[in-house]
Image (tube, rainbow, N blue to C red; front, side):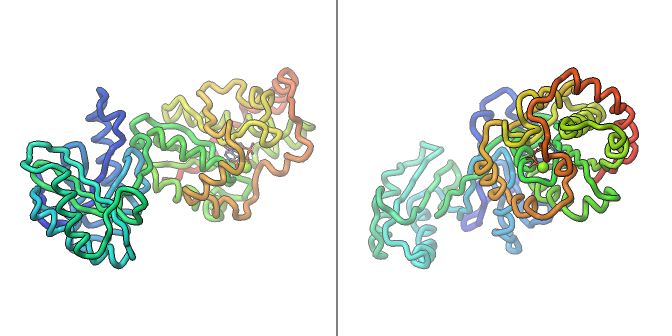
Length: 389
Ligand code: ATP
Ligand code: MG
């Protein structure tokens, strides 16, 4: 195992603790390590498994900001901190803390809270001793030390062979490592909602396989104009994602000869869900994620949702069903998909939106699906798809 030495700079990664105790612990940790390696593939560092943590040892040519940024996109981590390694004794901890004084001054810190935690309790000193010693050091350097009303913090984490000193503890994404729950299909539009639904799927450990239907002349055109960009952003959270892109032209050509009236949108959605259902069979996953929020638009009323899902064998999950638009937008901004989603795009659905029914009649819907030969449309469309990965 890679060794840690005094003064090494490291990033300490903490896992979500709930699943740590479960029976699948090793499987989760192996997946997490695989995901970390894949996210940091172009970075310079070395990795150690250190008790219940993963440590990234930084090397002289490491780009700390870039590594931290990538770490912040990995599901299954609860927190991380960039720390300096020292020996587990008061003298060394003090010496290492001295190195942080300059940084505290640069931050314009006045009141500092000292946090000391021992994961190994057999040393001859305890956390109170550390706090006493460091309080003296900080006071000498004109900082006040308080546990309330502080503007900065310093952390000391003491293990058996090492101690770690750092200034910031950063919250990570939480969730489960991507892939540990298997795969899922995500119906990805160019809009704001479905990328957020994808984020929720990945958060629960699902590896995403995106399915997109476009209104452009070629699949590449749709990919290059917008959907490829969304795919790339979302891929930062995933390992080995894939995306299938299909044209809507066959559906449009077949249905143009019939008057579907106000059911048009619901039938289009049914087409997309059945297409996703075919891909879910191909990819051997039982789940489809979509981005509906109840009542947001006419296709998202209870009766319409029922009709759209009719005949779909996979389980359809709608993680945004109870969210308001502003709540969805807030997440979209946080995960950096909002600006791309807001860009102009020829949306397949918008053509049919106006005047769409809010309460489709299931029997009428079934008749229409038969009349337009939806199964035939699906088979033809599947042949026109393209896989991107
Ligand atoms: P979004 O913001 O995700 O586009 P929306 O508010 O436009 O959603 P709908 O048009 O009813 O709502 O779409 C609901 C869901 O159906 C989407 O969240 C997505 O999962 C799926 N969907 C819609 N259009 C497409 C498309 N062109 N390709 C693939 N899936 C789509
Ligand atoms: Mg949309």
